[in-house]
Image (spheres, rainbow, N blue to C red):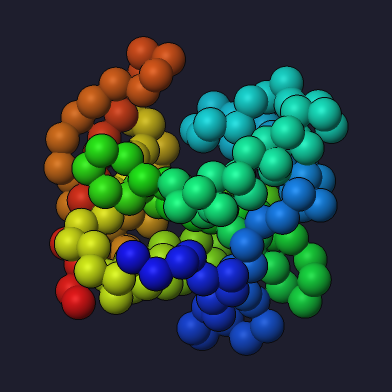
Length: 171
């Protein structure tokens, strides 16, 4: 697999790019963790403070450098609107995302997941994964719009039920 791209443009969203999250992007990590509906549906801890956000950004940079996955900032004209990315698992790569409320409803996550999936497919990956906690209708809608199909039920690390979605990639 080629090195992860540092930037990806989002088709149909002029001025919006996915750029690799860097250590100085810790503030978007902190802001996302403090949006009421993000921690219940994601791996963002609700009690994240500045030190934790800085550490989280550092860990994500190291993971990208090691080829384990990458987190991107959804950036519009220098403004961070959220994060998206993918991580390597035993079954391949799984995509994830979180957007600030003011950026929702514009198709940014759908565009980002589509762009990441296309890049992974171009690298020879055959399947990409996505997990949604049961009841997260917004993420289930993203999965459906991006061509994912329900694959199996599972359990989140905290014991809550989830659905694992898969998408076969073309390359």
